[in-house]
Image: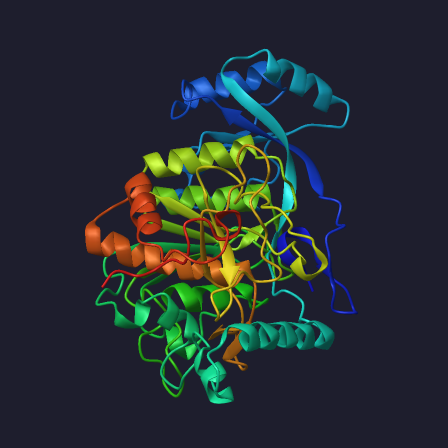
Length: 443
C-alpha cells in the first residue's frame, strides 16, 4: 500500500518516509511569461536548449486532453495552458540541458521529472497510543471539570460524530446547513479515477479522462472514488448517511495516477492543463511526494491557474508522526505558495497525528484544514463505501466547500482563495498546523 505523501506503509502498519523520490530521466522546463501562450516562441526556446524535433502539445488535442500514450515518443511535450514543457534527455545530455537553460532568460527553471503518489490512508494508531491519549484527556478533565461532573458530561463534550444522516465532517464544516449545492461549478478531481458504475453517481454530469497510458478512467485503486465522493457526492444517497458536499457540481474526473496509486509529473500536469482549459473553478489533488523544496513548475502552474480563475487545492501530506515528536513537512505540490495546502483534523477539531506541519522555509505553509480522520465516503463496488483517514480526505472537503463558495459569491481564482480562507473557523491549534482554521461552507 502506498503511504502518505511518498511514504510507504509496511507490513507492520507503520508508515515509513524513507522512499527515495523516483525520477523518470525527463526534465520539466518552466517557461517565462514572455513565451507562455506563444507556441512558436516556445518551440524556438526548447530547440535552443535541447535537440528536440518532435514536439507535442496539449492544444493539439480535443478539449486539451493530452493522450500521454500517444505522445510518449515525443522529444518534448508542451502544456500550453501551463507554460510548462517536459523534455526528454539522455543521461549525458542532462547537464548540458541544465547549463543551456540557466543561460536563457526565457526559462525560469528546470527540474527533474518526478513520480508522485496518492496520499493514502494513514496507518492506524496503536492501542498503546490510544490508551495514552485517553488517559491524558481524562487527567486533563479531572483537573479542569467542575466538581461533581459526570462521565456522561465527558461524552457530551465530543465535538462531532457520524450520525445516520450526516458524516461528522459535513456537520463540522457547516455543509449540512448550507443552501448551496455547487450548481454551475466544475470541479476536477485529479487522482486514481472514479468508479463510473457506482450507483451513487448515477445520472450525474461527469466528464472522465485518463492520462495514464493503457488505463481507462475507471478507478482500480479506490483513492480517487473516495475523494470524488467527499467533494461531489450526492445529497441523499440511498440507505446511508450523506457524505458529499457539492452534490450538483459538474465532475471532471482526471485519472493521473495509475491503479497502483502513482504517476509521473507528466500525467499530473496533463490533468491540470485539461482542467484549466475546461473552465474548472476548483482542482482537488490528494497526491504528492516528500520533497520540502518548492517546485518552480508547480508554483508556476498554481500562479497561472489562479490568473485563469482556477483554485488548486492539495493535500499537505501524511508524513508526520506527532506522537513521536515528528511534525513532518508539507511536500510538493501543496508546498507551492499558489496552491492551497490542506491539513487534517479529527472530530475533536484537533490536528491529526499524521498531518504535516508548515515548513520552516519559504513556501510550504499549511493554508487551511479539513476533516481528515475516519472519513466515510464512496469506494469502488462491490464495497460501495469505506472509512479512511489522511490529508487526502481533508482536501476534497475543502475542494467541495470551495465550489459552494464559488456558487454563492461568483468568486474565482485568487478571490475564491481569499473567500474560503476568511470564512474558516479559527481553531485552538497553532496556525503552523491548521493555517486559517477549519474550512466552512456558506449558509
